[in-house]
Length: 437
Image 1 (tube, rainbow, N blue to C red):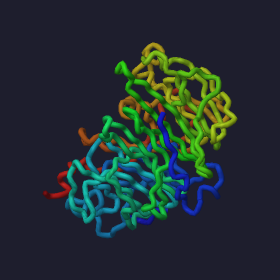
Image 2 (cartoon, rainbow, N blue to C red):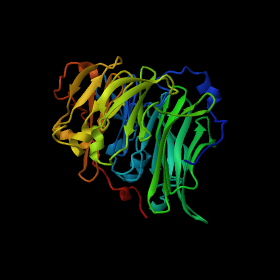
Image 3 (cartoon, rainbow, N blue to C red):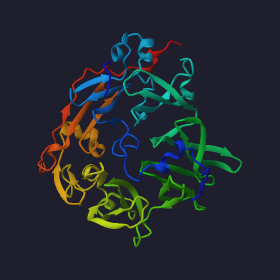
Image 4 (cartoon, helix red, strand yellow):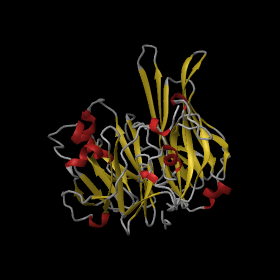
């Protein structure tokens, strides 16, 4: 390969940020060091292109040459064209992960390197582990494909993870049998990339609840964001649910619950994104527990990154519409409503683009052949362009696409220009071919 240019407890305030790196950095988005909130973890963007996971391999897509290059520069390696299972596994671009469509490896770009968290079937030394005892392994891949090295391993299930300003944050935990019954305990933990062995617990959710989860883990500037969900069983056998969204300062590790003053107690903060170093807060009101809820109009709010100075910036958006941002624009789509809601209200899929002044600048749709695969998970990408992959192990289909944002403002409801990234991807292989019992 050529060279590539509620029961909650806050724990362990002394987090191991890299030499207090987060405290000395500006409270703005810093490319290459901050979590890429605008991508779902399959692609990570750089100035020259993007690292993309397609199936079991990682590639670099060079925007200038439109080449898709396996992330390995071993001169004697055939990469994804290797036929020998052992040589294929040793390729720097190979993840040798479980062929599990329900698990998507987390990919993060940080300071010129790629960090990938995935399920591993192999113990230290390359020996196969039991399928029931897989481990979650964090690998560091050099940005030019010259090496990859394991930096951290856990037998606990890793639900989500991100690399942000020198540290790794991840959620773990699950059900555990205790004297008074089965309880659910979920933890938010962190360690420095400089010292992965010094792990700390930042947040504990659970203890005396039936189910709990920490979700939507996001980093931006000197802040960490996450949502929590708690369910308790009442005496009559019904469930009581609590949902919250929090901001944690990485300067002093104080925690603040995000909220919108004046709204109903049934209204929760359902999601966040970012625009011009401002926090965008997306509420949702729970009333009927049916698709009728999708059409309840809601305001979208802007706030400082700590949640202060909140103000309404968009009004009357159906709360079933999905909202994402790339830092410079907001993208709002009706995909959930078009597929699950009222066909008379939303007869076709449509995407709306809003600029930093919250003016709608364009609308577009996407190809019918791609709608069933992307729908509301359509890629937002970075401010300049976006890319996405389709992986269907059952049908043996793998492909990658990209789209340039230079034409935003001119679609006027027409189909988006999407370009297929030309590459001969290998067919999905069965994990058993990688080893011999």
